[in-house]
Every structure is written in structure tokens, then in C-alpha cells.
Image (cartoon, rainbow, N blue to C red; front, side, top):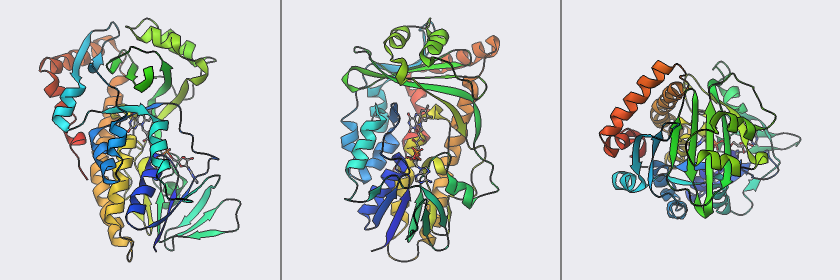
Length: 379
Ligand SMILES: Cc1cc2nc3c(=O)[nH]c(=O)nc-3n(C[C@H](O)[C@H](O)[C@H](O)COP(=O)(O)OP(=O)(O)OC[C@H]3O[C@@H](n4cnc5c(N)ncnc54)[C@H](O)[C@@H]3O)c2cc1C
């Protein structure tokens, strides 16, 4: 049986392992962490990713976790809506709403379906030989032989740097981010509120929890003694339910990360027997909520294109071509939206908000059409 080694047990690596196992690959997943514990944050899974999850039989399980109701859209700090739509509008257009869930819920679903014994934790990959598929693991004398290696080792991918050493590393996108899951029953409707260089997102989850995220255009590397206090300082006077959410947040659970992305696309998503996937291949800003969704797409396309019978080279070249064409415009668009959110100049912000409001006047159809190219994808 052909053997695939997947490096990294994030959403991309786990989905790839499941998709390959369904295509008769024997799969080993190597994860450097001692256990799979995703960051305590939420995730938006869009209709395109739900369709990809259908291929591995998990779409409906994820759909069941959807808790979104009411209006969703973009607001101003005082509460006024710039554009809005509903989960029903999205479902009517794309067949599905965007499902909001915790990262751990998705990771549990994926990890729970791995073949017995496929996951090896506390196993850090040091290097891969793309010509032979030989994988060297840190601290172990062994090397692991693979017919196919899937590098799903995230934004700081050492495999990407090894395969494309001349390619520039991800750069700071100009914003820092905060994330927290807050218990606050009664919040309905997802919203993203745009201020001057600031964003606050509210995403209701199942079980009376709310996933909150925020970004601020500040220099890289800044940290506050108490990040919840910092959020209160920046957003504590914004519209309801933002102050109540910040009051209810446990300061110990507020995560802060600077956002990085790759400025120029890689020349390819493969070399020899190695495929790059997810953030290892195309790290993007979170503005379109597509990083994990694209990793899920990558995984099912890879398993479709690369056959366990024979040389993977031809299939990998097709995978690379298709996924570069699909992800490059999404990375660019996400970055462009990210730039708009960094604007601070009051006149520029007024123009930006006016344009969004004008688009909103044409109703939910226009707002949704912006997503057509991304959300209508099917495997
Ligand atoms: C603030 C924020 C909000 C976001 N919101 C969304 C959203 O709503 N929807 C969405 O689709 N996306 C979103 N994203 C993007 C999404 O989180 C990422 O694109 C996605 O998690 C990438 O998954 P991955 O599997 O490629 O990488 P990762 O999740 O980074 O997984 C990589 C794994 O590889 C392991 N690893 C690394 N190196 C090695 C090694 N040498 N050996 C062994 N193991 C190794 C790591 O420990 C890790 O477990 C968001 C991102 C941010 C920052």
C-alpha cells in the first residue's frame, strides 16, 4: 500500500490525512506538539469548505453545529449597519450558510476519524528529501519512507523554507489580532464592526458562547500586561453587545497574535514527492475567513489528483497548478481588505464607509455576490 506522511495535525493536515486514507493511502500524521490542542478560538466554515468536507463524509456533521440566526453584516462603532444579510439569504444563494463553530469542535471531528494509530504526537520533522520522500524526525535515529509527503506545517513551515529557500518569508500584515470565546447567552447575529484602524467581530456559537475577535493597526510585537484591558480601552465604548462581551471575557483566555501573510505566491505548491498545503502553502490574512477553508479545499483536491498507484509527480503538478490558481486571488483579496481595515484618516474612513453603505442599499444580494467566486467552488 502506498504510504503518505502528513506533517502537522492542524485543520489542513488532519483533513488531508482523512482524504488520502479514503483513497487507499496508508497515512501517518506527524505532529510536533504533545497533543492536538487547537487555540481556544472560533472558526467560520464557508459553503465552499462544507462542500469539500462532504467529499470526506463530514459536511453534515459540521453543518449540525451551526448556531447562527438573525442578521449578519458590517456595522459602525455606534451600531449602525453598513451592509447586512441573513443566514437564510446565504443559504438560498450558496446552498449553505457560513457555519460558525469552535476550532476544537472541528478538530475533534477530524481527529476522531483518523485511522487507528495514524497520529504520532511529540514528533517534530526536521527535514524531507523531496526526491526520495525520506522524512527525518528530530531526536530519533529513524527516517520514515514515504511515497508522498504532505507538508501542512503551518505559516512558519520549515518545509516551505527548505523547498523554496529564495522565496521571501511571510511579512507582518500591519495588524495585530485578539481572539476569545466568551460565555454570553442571548447574542444572535454575526457582525463585524469597522472603526478607524480597528475591527471587532461578534460570532455567536452553539451553547450560549460567542466567538469574539478584534484587530488593530499597530506596529508588530506590542503586547499589553492585560489584553482584555487593552480591548476594553479600544472597544469598550462601541455598540452592544461589545462592552458586555468584554466584561464577560476571562482575561486568561484572550489570545493575541500579530497577523502575517505571504506577499508573493510561491512558484509551486510541490517539489518532488512533497506537497505544500494550507498555511504552509498560502498563508493569508484572516479578512475573508478563508485560511482554514482553503486548507480543507487543498486537502480534498490533493487526494483526488494524486493516485496511490504509481508516481505521484504528474498528480502533484496538477494539484499545484489548480490550487495556485484558486488561492492566489483569495490571498490578494484578503490582503486588500486588510489594508482597508487599517485606514485611520477620518476622511478616508468616511469615504470607505460611504461606499460600503451604498453597496448595502442594493440589499443583501450585492453583499453576497461579493462572495460568489469564493463560496460557489465545488470539488
Ligand atoms: C485571527 C485569525 C482568525 C482566523 N479565522 C479564520 C476563519 O474564520 N476561517 C478560516 O477558514 N480561517 C481562519 N483563519 C485562518 C486559519 O486559522 C488557518 O489558515 C488554518 O488554521 C491553517 O491550518 P493549517 O493546518 O494549514 O496550519 P496550522 O493550524 O498552523 O497547523 C500546523 C501544524 O503543524 C505542526 N507543525 C509545525 N511544524 C512542524 C514540524 N516540523 N513537525 C511536526 N509538526 C509540525 C504545528 O504544531 C501545527 O499543529 C484565521 C486565522 C487567524 C490568525
